Image (cartoon, rainbow, N blue to C red; front, top):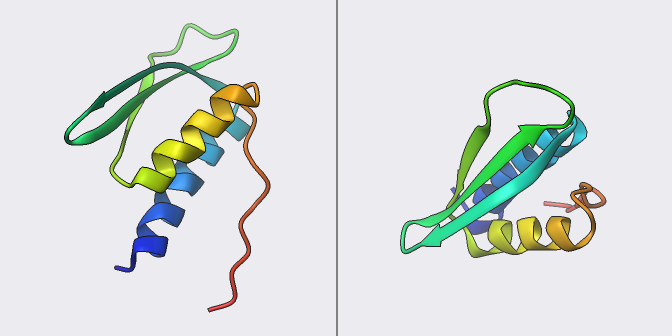
Length: 79
């Protein structure tokens, strides 16, 4: 799988959770990647943890945090 395809898969997973009303409550970084914890706003559901392995996906999450946990505009690429 190409580097972009790996990033795009992780970005879509993050954006899907954000669009479903989840918000980022914790980010734990280590040598294996970043474990991002999401919690649905106004719900008692269990937190969802997502392991991000690509640096670009970790940057995408940081951008979402600074933007107020909103998904970014979709990336369009012609391949």
